[in-house]
Length: 57
Image (cartoon, rainbow, N blue to C red; front, side, top):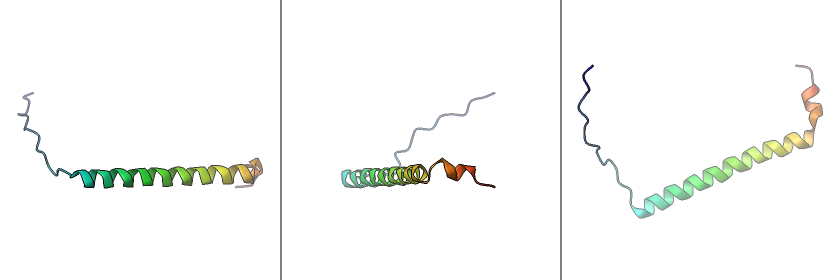
C-alpha cells in the first residue's frame, strides 16, 4: 500500500493566556461538580442502606 503524504500540522485556533486560564477554571469547576454529584449518590446509597437492593424488580 502506498502511504499518503503527511501534511504539515496546521496551527488552528491559538488561545490567549486569558482564554487558557478560563478554559482551565471551567474544567476544574466541571470536575468538582461531577465529583460532588458522585459523592452525593454514594452518600445517599449509604444512608438508604443495603435494604434498597433487596426489593422486588
